[in-house]
Amino acid sequence: MTMGLFRQEAVQAHEGTKERGDILRFERRWETVAVKVVAIAAVVGFLFASLFGVDEYAKGAAVVRIDGRRVVTALGQGTIDAVSVTPGQSVLAGAVLAHMSDTDERAELHRAESELELLLAKMLRDPNDASTKQAVVALRARRDQAKNAVESRYVRATIAGIVSDVRAQVGHHVGPGDVIATVTPSEGAKASLVMLVSAEYLPMLREGQKVRFELDGFRYEYQDMVVSDVSSEAVGPLEAQRVLGQEREGAVSLQPGAKVLVRAKLPASSFQSNGHPYGYFDGLTGTAEIRVRREPLLVTLLPALRAVLP
Image 1 (cartoon, rainbow, N blue to C red):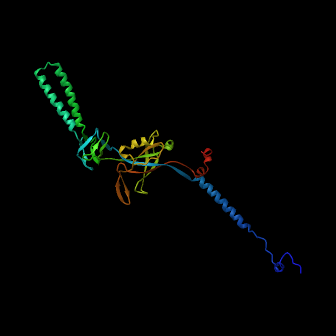
Image 2 (cartoon, helix red, strand yellow):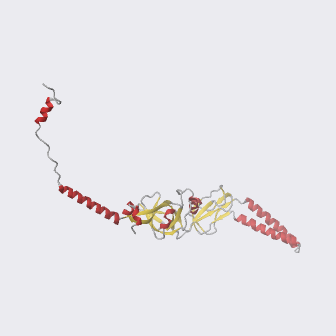
Image 3 (cartoon, rainbow, N blue to C red):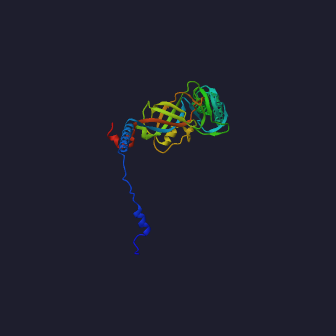
Protein backbone atom coordinates (compact mmCIF):
# COMPACT_ATOMS: atom_id res chain seq x y z
CA MET A 1 0.00 0.00 0.00
CA THR A 2 1.40 3.31 -1.08
CA MET A 3 1.57 6.00 1.54
CA GLY A 4 -0.15 9.14 0.32
CA LEU A 5 0.39 12.73 1.33
CA PHE A 6 -2.57 12.70 3.72
CA ARG A 7 -3.54 10.23 6.34
CA GLN A 8 -6.27 7.74 5.48
CA GLU A 9 -8.54 9.01 8.24
CA ALA A 10 -8.28 12.60 6.95
CA VAL A 11 -9.12 11.52 3.40
CA GLN A 12 -12.16 9.57 4.58
CA ALA A 13 -13.38 12.49 6.69
CA HIS A 14 -13.05 14.82 3.73
CA GLU A 15 -14.92 12.51 1.37
CA GLY A 16 -17.68 12.03 3.93
CA THR A 17 -18.50 15.77 4.19
CA LYS A 18 -21.29 16.56 1.79
CA GLU A 19 -22.70 19.84 3.22
CA ARG A 20 -21.39 23.17 2.00
CA GLY A 21 -21.86 26.65 3.60
CA ASP A 22 -24.55 28.95 2.19
CA ILE A 23 -23.84 32.46 0.86
CA LEU A 24 -24.12 35.43 3.24
CA ARG A 25 -27.50 37.06 2.91
CA PHE A 26 -27.55 40.89 3.52
CA GLU A 27 -30.79 42.70 4.38
CA ARG A 28 -30.66 46.09 2.57
CA ARG A 29 -33.53 47.50 4.66
CA TRP A 30 -31.22 47.88 7.67
CA GLU A 31 -28.64 49.58 5.50
CA THR A 32 -31.20 52.21 4.51
CA VAL A 33 -32.26 52.75 8.12
CA ALA A 34 -28.66 53.15 9.28
CA VAL A 35 -27.88 55.70 6.56
CA LYS A 36 -30.99 57.74 7.47
CA VAL A 37 -30.13 57.68 11.19
CA VAL A 38 -26.57 58.86 10.51
CA ALA A 39 -27.81 61.60 8.17
CA ILE A 40 -30.40 62.83 10.68
CA ALA A 41 -27.81 62.81 13.47
CA ALA A 42 -25.39 64.80 11.31
CA VAL A 43 -28.05 67.42 10.47
CA VAL A 44 -29.14 67.73 14.12
CA GLY A 45 -25.52 68.02 15.23
CA PHE A 46 -24.81 70.72 12.66
CA LEU A 47 -27.90 72.70 13.65
CA PHE A 48 -27.01 72.38 17.34
CA ALA A 49 -23.44 73.55 16.75
CA SER A 50 -24.68 76.44 14.59
CA LEU A 51 -27.56 77.70 16.75
CA PHE A 52 -26.29 77.13 20.28
CA GLY A 53 -23.45 79.22 21.65
CA VAL A 54 -20.63 78.87 24.16
CA ASP A 55 -19.97 81.61 26.70
CA GLU A 56 -16.46 82.84 27.50
CA TYR A 57 -15.83 84.27 30.97
CA ALA A 58 -13.16 86.57 32.38
CA LYS A 59 -12.44 84.99 35.75
CA GLY A 60 -10.34 86.39 38.57
CA ALA A 61 -9.92 87.06 42.26
CA ALA A 62 -12.22 89.60 43.91
CA VAL A 63 -12.13 91.54 47.17
CA VAL A 64 -15.08 93.06 49.04
CA ARG A 65 -14.64 96.74 49.91
CA ILE A 66 -16.85 98.84 52.18
CA ASP A 67 -17.46 102.23 50.58
CA GLY A 68 -16.36 105.15 52.72
CA ARG A 69 -14.13 103.07 54.97
CA ARG A 70 -11.10 104.94 56.27
CA VAL A 71 -7.80 103.44 57.33
CA VAL A 72 -6.19 105.54 60.07
CA THR A 73 -2.40 105.29 60.12
CA ALA A 74 0.40 106.59 62.31
CA LEU A 75 2.06 109.83 61.18
CA GLY A 76 5.34 109.08 62.92
CA GLN A 77 7.14 106.33 64.76
CA GLY A 78 6.86 105.58 68.44
CA THR A 79 5.32 103.36 71.09
CA ILE A 80 1.58 103.13 71.69
CA ASP A 81 0.84 104.47 75.19
CA ALA A 82 -2.95 104.14 75.12
CA VAL A 83 -5.78 102.88 72.92
CA SER A 84 -8.99 104.84 73.46
CA VAL A 85 -11.51 102.85 71.39
CA THR A 86 -12.75 99.31 70.85
CA PRO A 87 -14.24 97.65 67.74
CA GLY A 88 -17.89 98.54 67.28
CA GLN A 89 -17.61 101.85 69.13
CA SER A 90 -19.13 104.98 67.57
CA VAL A 91 -16.77 107.93 67.19
CA LEU A 92 -16.95 111.49 65.90
CA ALA A 93 -14.57 113.04 63.43
CA GLY A 94 -11.46 114.08 65.30
CA ALA A 95 -11.98 111.67 68.20
CA VAL A 96 -8.77 110.25 69.68
CA LEU A 97 -8.27 106.61 68.72
CA ALA A 98 -4.82 106.05 70.21
CA HIS A 99 -2.00 107.98 71.85
CA MET A 100 1.68 107.49 71.12
CA SER A 101 4.50 108.18 73.55
CA ASP A 102 5.29 111.92 73.53
CA THR A 103 7.87 112.39 76.29
CA ASP A 104 10.45 114.01 74.03
CA GLU A 105 7.91 116.17 72.24
CA ARG A 106 6.43 117.49 75.49
CA ALA A 107 9.89 118.19 76.87
CA GLU A 108 10.70 120.24 73.78
CA LEU A 109 7.39 122.11 74.10
CA HIS A 110 8.08 122.87 77.75
CA ARG A 111 11.54 124.23 76.92
CA ALA A 112 10.20 126.41 74.12
CA GLU A 113 7.43 127.84 76.31
CA SER A 114 9.82 128.52 79.20
CA GLU A 115 12.33 130.31 76.98
CA LEU A 116 9.52 132.27 75.34
CA GLU A 117 8.22 133.45 78.73
CA LEU A 118 11.69 134.68 79.69
CA LEU A 119 12.08 136.57 76.44
CA LEU A 120 8.62 138.12 76.76
CA ALA A 121 9.52 139.31 80.26
CA LYS A 122 12.78 140.77 78.91
CA MET A 123 10.93 142.51 76.09
CA LEU A 124 8.56 144.11 78.60
CA ARG A 125 11.55 145.68 80.32
CA ASP A 126 13.02 146.90 77.03
CA PRO A 127 10.36 147.03 74.28
CA ASN A 128 12.77 148.61 71.78
CA ASP A 129 15.33 145.78 71.85
CA ALA A 130 15.32 144.51 68.24
CA SER A 131 17.31 141.36 68.97
CA THR A 132 14.82 140.34 71.65
CA LYS A 133 11.92 140.84 69.23
CA GLN A 134 13.60 138.62 66.64
CA ALA A 135 14.26 135.96 69.26
CA VAL A 136 10.60 136.06 70.34
CA VAL A 137 9.45 135.50 66.75
CA ALA A 138 11.80 132.55 66.35
CA LEU A 139 10.74 131.03 69.69
CA ARG A 140 7.06 131.35 68.83
CA ALA A 141 7.67 129.39 65.63
CA ARG A 142 9.62 126.83 67.64
CA ARG A 143 6.81 126.59 70.20
CA ASP A 144 4.16 126.12 67.49
CA GLN A 145 6.27 123.41 65.90
CA ALA A 146 6.59 121.66 69.26
CA LYS A 147 2.80 121.88 69.75
CA ASN A 148 2.25 120.28 66.35
CA ALA A 149 4.71 117.52 67.26
CA VAL A 150 2.79 116.82 70.48
CA GLU A 151 -0.52 116.84 68.59
CA SER A 152 0.86 114.40 66.01
CA ARG A 153 1.23 111.82 68.76
CA TYR A 154 -2.58 111.64 68.98
CA VAL A 155 -4.12 109.40 66.33
CA ARG A 156 -7.58 110.75 65.51
CA ALA A 157 -10.55 109.54 63.48
CA THR A 158 -10.81 111.24 60.10
CA ILE A 159 -14.57 110.67 59.77
CA ALA A 160 -17.54 110.04 62.02
CA GLY A 161 -18.58 106.41 62.10
CA ILE A 162 -18.01 103.07 63.74
CA VAL A 163 -14.62 101.63 64.61
CA SER A 164 -14.53 98.40 62.61
CA ASP A 165 -11.06 97.25 63.61
CA VAL A 166 -8.28 98.22 66.03
CA ARG A 167 -4.79 97.08 65.08
CA ALA A 168 -2.73 99.01 67.64
CA GLN A 169 -1.91 97.49 71.01
CA VAL A 170 -0.46 99.21 74.06
CA GLY A 171 3.31 98.83 74.09
CA HIS A 172 3.64 98.10 70.37
CA HIS A 173 6.13 100.09 68.34
CA VAL A 174 4.69 101.56 65.14
CA GLY A 175 6.18 103.46 62.24
CA PRO A 176 4.85 106.00 59.72
CA GLY A 177 2.03 104.48 57.69
CA ASP A 178 1.33 101.59 60.06
CA VAL A 179 -2.40 100.93 60.46
CA ILE A 180 -3.79 101.96 63.85
CA ALA A 181 -7.54 101.45 63.28
CA THR A 182 -10.25 101.50 60.63
CA VAL A 183 -13.49 103.48 60.70
CA THR A 184 -16.57 102.87 58.55
CA PRO A 185 -19.53 105.22 58.06
CA SER A 186 -22.22 104.61 60.67
CA GLU A 187 -25.13 104.75 58.22
CA GLY A 188 -25.62 103.94 54.58
CA ALA A 189 -22.36 102.05 54.16
CA LYS A 190 -22.51 100.05 50.93
CA ALA A 191 -20.36 97.16 49.81
CA SER A 192 -18.62 96.99 46.47
CA LEU A 193 -16.41 94.51 44.68
CA VAL A 194 -12.93 95.00 43.23
CA MET A 195 -12.01 92.30 40.71
CA LEU A 196 -8.62 91.49 39.21
CA VAL A 197 -8.87 89.81 35.81
CA SER A 198 -6.29 89.12 33.12
CA ALA A 199 -5.46 92.12 30.92
CA GLU A 200 -6.15 90.09 27.76
CA TYR A 201 -9.87 90.71 28.39
CA LEU A 202 -9.54 94.52 28.60
CA PRO A 203 -10.84 95.17 25.04
CA MET A 204 -13.94 93.10 25.80
CA LEU A 205 -14.78 94.59 29.22
CA ARG A 206 -17.29 97.40 29.57
CA GLU A 207 -19.80 98.84 32.01
CA GLY A 208 -23.08 96.99 32.37
CA GLN A 209 -21.74 93.47 31.84
CA LYS A 210 -23.06 90.81 34.18
CA VAL A 211 -20.90 89.61 37.06
CA ARG A 212 -21.31 86.50 39.19
CA PHE A 213 -19.50 86.46 42.53
CA GLU A 214 -18.85 83.48 44.79
CA LEU A 215 -17.55 84.27 48.28
CA ASP A 216 -14.79 82.04 49.64
CA GLY A 217 -16.23 79.63 52.18
CA PHE A 218 -19.77 79.81 50.73
CA ARG A 219 -19.74 77.48 47.73
CA TYR A 220 -22.56 77.85 45.23
CA GLU A 221 -23.85 80.98 47.01
CA TYR A 222 -23.75 83.35 44.06
CA GLN A 223 -24.36 87.08 43.96
CA ASP A 224 -25.24 88.68 40.62
CA MET A 225 -24.41 92.29 39.78
CA VAL A 226 -23.20 94.44 36.89
CA VAL A 227 -19.87 96.09 36.13
CA SER A 228 -19.80 99.74 37.24
CA ASP A 229 -16.24 100.70 36.29
CA VAL A 230 -13.34 99.29 34.25
CA SER A 231 -9.81 100.65 34.51
CA SER A 232 -8.54 102.10 31.26
CA GLU A 233 -5.05 100.63 31.67
CA ALA A 234 -3.53 97.35 32.73
CA VAL A 235 -1.35 97.18 35.84
CA GLY A 236 1.15 94.70 37.18
CA PRO A 237 0.58 92.47 40.22
CA LEU A 238 2.53 94.81 42.52
CA GLU A 239 0.48 97.85 41.50
CA ALA A 240 -2.72 95.84 41.84
CA GLN A 241 -1.66 94.90 45.37
CA ARG A 242 -1.05 98.58 46.15
CA VAL A 243 -4.57 99.44 45.00
CA LEU A 244 -6.00 96.80 47.32
CA GLY A 245 -4.12 98.37 50.22
CA GLN A 246 -1.19 97.58 52.45
CA GLU A 247 -3.36 95.70 54.92
CA ARG A 248 -4.49 93.31 52.14
CA GLU A 249 -0.97 92.17 51.27
CA GLY A 250 -0.97 88.41 50.79
CA ALA A 251 -4.76 88.11 51.11
CA VAL A 252 -5.18 87.56 47.37
CA SER A 253 -3.00 85.22 45.35
CA LEU A 254 -2.14 86.94 42.07
CA GLN A 255 -0.78 85.07 39.09
CA PRO A 256 2.03 86.68 37.05
CA GLY A 257 0.92 88.96 34.25
CA ALA A 258 -0.88 92.26 33.76
CA LYS A 259 -4.25 92.75 35.47
CA VAL A 260 -7.32 94.89 34.90
CA LEU A 261 -9.20 96.40 37.84
CA VAL A 262 -12.96 95.98 37.51
CA ARG A 263 -15.46 97.35 40.03
CA ALA A 264 -19.08 96.47 40.72
CA LYS A 265 -21.67 97.33 43.37
CA LEU A 266 -22.93 94.47 45.51
CA PRO A 267 -26.75 94.36 45.58
CA ALA A 268 -26.86 94.62 49.39
CA SER A 269 -24.61 94.95 52.42
CA SER A 270 -25.54 91.40 53.49
CA PHE A 271 -26.38 88.03 51.93
CA GLN A 272 -28.30 84.86 52.76
CA SER A 273 -26.81 81.39 53.13
CA ASN A 274 -28.96 78.42 54.14
CA GLY A 275 -31.58 80.82 55.42
CA HIS A 276 -29.18 82.74 57.68
CA PRO A 277 -28.23 86.37 57.05
CA TYR A 278 -24.56 87.34 56.97
CA GLY A 279 -22.93 90.73 56.53
CA TYR A 280 -20.17 91.70 54.16
CA PHE A 281 -16.92 92.90 55.68
CA ASP A 282 -14.04 94.74 54.09
CA GLY A 283 -11.37 92.37 52.87
CA LEU A 284 -13.50 89.26 52.25
CA THR A 285 -12.27 87.44 49.16
CA GLY A 286 -13.87 85.31 46.50
CA THR A 287 -14.00 84.58 42.78
CA ALA A 288 -15.81 86.64 40.16
CA GLU A 289 -16.79 85.76 36.60
CA ILE A 290 -17.70 88.24 33.86
CA ARG A 291 -19.26 87.02 30.63
CA VAL A 292 -17.28 88.76 27.90
CA ARG A 293 -18.56 87.10 24.72
CA ARG A 294 -20.68 84.34 23.24
CA GLU A 295 -19.97 82.49 20.00
CA PRO A 296 -21.56 79.51 18.21
CA LEU A 297 -20.32 76.09 19.19
CA LEU A 298 -19.40 75.47 15.54
CA VAL A 299 -16.94 78.39 15.63
CA THR A 300 -15.43 77.06 18.83
CA LEU A 301 -14.88 73.68 17.18
CA LEU A 302 -13.61 75.23 13.94
CA PRO A 303 -11.86 78.53 14.79
CA ALA A 304 -11.09 79.18 11.10
CA LEU A 305 -14.79 80.04 10.62
CA ARG A 306 -14.28 83.30 12.55
CA ALA A 307 -12.85 84.81 9.37
CA VAL A 308 -15.94 83.82 7.37
CA LEU A 309 -18.89 84.19 9.74
CA PRO A 310 -20.00 87.66 10.91
